[in-house]
Length: 349
Image 1: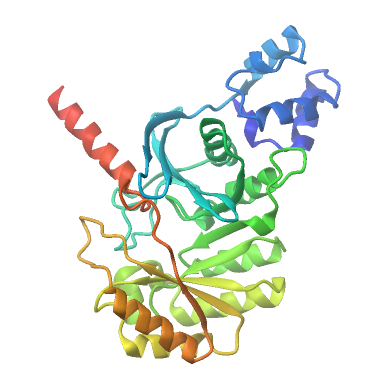
Image 2: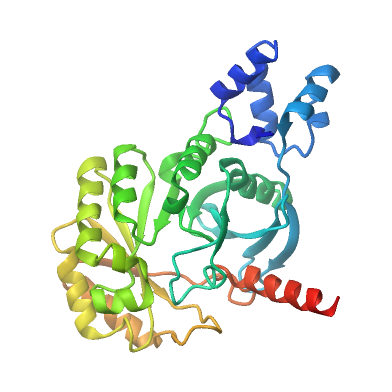
């Protein structure tokens, strides 16, 4: 059965025409879908017969809140959504001066295997549909009563490993007839699948690309990010150059600060050399500790020195503000806890 929320307005028009309905109904249905209705019966300006036929022909996805944690520190809200097949994904709602930002997942689990991230500890189960990614935003808005202004695709999963569905989601979420979040307010984070970065460049989207670099040398990067074996630093940077040359949009480089692993002075020098002469922004990320990982966060004074070393060499660098420290707000942590508890409950049965 077709997931109706994954359809564009034009695809809806085609589907309705095949059902013998007027094409203008597509706009009405699309609007209802993007308001987060939980059943076709809520579409009150449609006939009872049409609502019944929609229910017969289409699947309407409605995620359930499996867990919800609200930070007492900064009001950050972390959601664990249970999907129709019982799998769970995480989303985070964050408050900034410029508005409400959300971080969404694109896959159930992840196959990238980064050593510092809880998302990939159990591998990838499946990718999310465009509609399921959209659901995370629709139902966070509905639950919180707050309008989302910015989106970050930096939750569980590698967005470019779910390329087609993520691309469709980007068009759906920025559609003027829907929730209409402009692409300039959307950031997509990738671990560095170079050929997909080049594919994305040719789409000529207005989104911000964030590349999870995390180390400037192949030896260190391969030891913490297996993707580097397929796409070494030089190949990745070539793709990033192509992306900027094709789109004209500056890339943000995510750089995880791990004690005595990625925070050494020579690595700051090498990173600055790597980015010399290209419009770039480095976002230094104090490591969130994951129980299963041997990596530890850099000391605050080391992060400061690393930032200063980059800026001294002409590279813009900021330190990411840590949100929701008391609610497992780091990617994958809440789902991992749920999986452990589900495993314990099954072993007791």
